[in-house]
Length: 281
Ligand SMILES: [Zn+2]
Image (tube, rainbow, N blue to C red; front, side, top):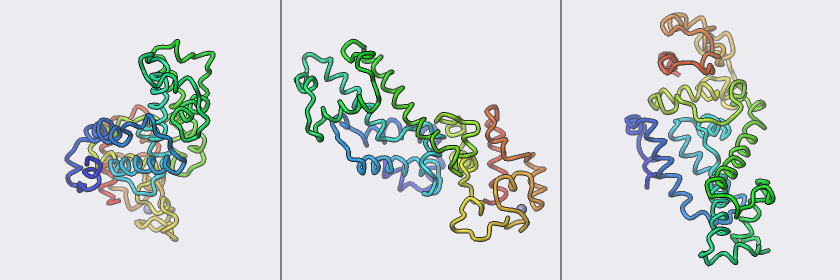
């Protein structure tokens, strides 16, 4: 129901809801309802991809960013991990419960690995191997649930970070991010700014803003439509276009790299978003 709300609500309605609230809805209602009772699921590769795509659709809608926005950029800026990894994290905690709850009827099931590839216990045992959780180092029956959660969450976050780092430097949409960002982490602007402003800053950081050079497939000619001189890209937009001199002065625009500075204030990001609105991008 809520998922439908996010998709069917007009931008006008979504605009009136704080970003912080949208992310709260996402975390407390949308995601839990999508993975309810996932502890015993055994998902194929295809099913994992489908469920990750649902999550990405929701995040793209919240961020108001095109469908072509790469998942790596979305994970990096929101600090979200793929839903399939979230499911595996829950499953590993379930494994702890099975192995530690003596009253649980499934104890025998848990201590005798099955060879049936579709069985829950086969899946759970495999996860432990997948995340390389050393049985001698972390004996599941000797650690508390909290310790086990920490161990498994760390491994899963590491997997998400490794997958971001593996391609971030090579992908054109994340290459700028990767210079200042080596880990996926939710950026403050995503909850502090209004949705329209947060969306602009996200698209600027991930090269999804409406510049010709960002959508090469649909734009043969990539010259700036304003001055018709240089390539229509972020570097040109921020301080080098002769047709935007008045706006540069009005919004004190210096260079594109400014939005990647860790100490940049929310007020300054708001001003940059207003500059983009004034350019009518
Ligand atoms: Zn220009």
